[in-house]
Amino acid sequence: MTEKVIYVMYDDEEVLKDGAKTLVSKGIKIADVFSPFPIHGIDPIIGVKNTRLGIMAFLYGLTGLMLATVGMRFFMVTDWPMNIGGKPNFSYLENMLAFVPVTFEFTVLCAAHGMVITYLLANKTLPGMPAHNPDPRTTDDRFVMEIRLSDNHQSSENEIDELLKNTGFVEIDKKEVN
Amino acid sequence: MEFKITKAAKNTILYVVLTGLLLLIIGLISGYNDPHFVTRLLTNGLINGFFFFALGLGALFFLALNYATESGWYASVKRVIEAVAGFLPYGMGLLGLFLLIITLFDGAHIYIWMDSEVVKHDEIIQGKTAYLNVWFFWIRTLIYFTTYFLFLRGFKRRSLEEDERGGTDLHFKNYKKGATFLVFFAVFSSTSAWDWLMSIDVHWFSTLYGWYTFAGMWCSSMVVLVITTMYLKKLGYLPKVNESHIHDLGKWTFATSFLWSYLWFSQFMLIWYANIGEEVTYYAMRIENFKFLYFAMFIINFAFPMLILMSRDAKRNFGILTFVGLIILTGHWLDVYIMVSAGSLGANATIGFIEVGMALMVLGSFVFVILRNLTKASLTPVNHPFLDESIHHDI
Image (cartoon, rainbow over all chains, first blue to last red; front, side, top):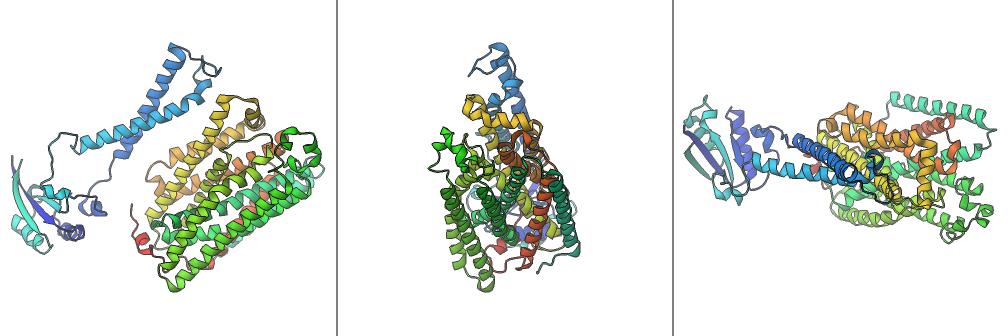
């Protein structure tokens, strides 16, 4: 099923923010904003939910912590007891201090890599994936607001056009997308 | 907006100080014929003198750090930082007074290297006398005090002057002075920790000790800053301070707790691993005499902030921040307590009337001085160049 999408381009992020505020106050839902850099304060205006990446980072960290603990216990105590500096090599707990740095590093490693991969997957920006932004100029110096008509059944296309007129855009583009 | 100390606050402070005084008097009467009485009293003086001095110094360091990095967000809480740093002269007075009495008592079994009878029979101390002797000790102490005091006075004067006339020349001057302070502080924070605290365990040394002391100081100061800010906010002052500022101060508390734990652990693990007789005595003494307190102190200073303050919401919640903050503050007081008294009293150290009483008395005076400092200037700096940025701080 195809639907109609309006792409409105601005050359200043503050102008876009003011425009978005006007639209949202009239009950128009903005699907997304494309920008070369993060626009400060745009999230609450267009209603982007708080990221849950932090929670995922915590879970990845816990995974790393557990893997490291299990791994170290197996490598250094169970499978082949290692005698380093005459420290007790038959017990994990008594040797725990020696394993803390490795466990810490592995926790950080898992949390960091997990976060990066999750971020790339969630945004569909893994290397080699096709670009999703509507216009290559949004990676340079332009800012684009995306409005989907299917999100805004209460207003007609003409009403939205009328509202957009005074927001100071530089270009407007309408596309049928899947 | 001008701050006025409320009657309730004045009464609470009075009760805290009076309770402390009462406990101290009970402790003095019941303990004066104890053979370790003088050492115990002076040990307490050193603990509280250093701990509260360090709270002021940590705030001064944080102020200088923000000047040197030209931070913007902190501008609207700057006066709170200045008020806490303003305790520094009183802290110096208290610490200096107890250091002087200890010196007059030939070290009072706290700094045994001050006692010439001990040094005569101790080869290890003899090897250190070039650095650890009373004259050089006092020259260094006075240099630290003078440097800190001059920088504090300069920052304060320029801050008030900025309120009057504004402009950016004062800002750039502060920037330079802040960076200069950090250079001095980088050296002095380590050497002063060696002088005042590490020399108690005079046979032992650790190169991490200065940073470890400094991290504890920084963390406790951040707790004081965040609690003071929330207190003022609760009374309806500081209208320009929003949740993001509290969140940032909470993050600093969280991060510095980690810094402290990291350094504590690094020092502990290296010594545990190497297992050299000269080095492990330090921990052997502490584990022998303070086993529960020593590890409980580490747990509350590390696990507590880690688990509770990790989420974003917790760092924006006044109740949670105050609760965790007070516990961390107690934890760091215990840290200083064990640092000092494990070396000076060892197995004879207890937490009794004298310890609690003196800590409460100094705490009450500390809070009073901070609140009085807050009344002396407008709570929001008027012409700080980054004030606008700070007002719109949003994270």
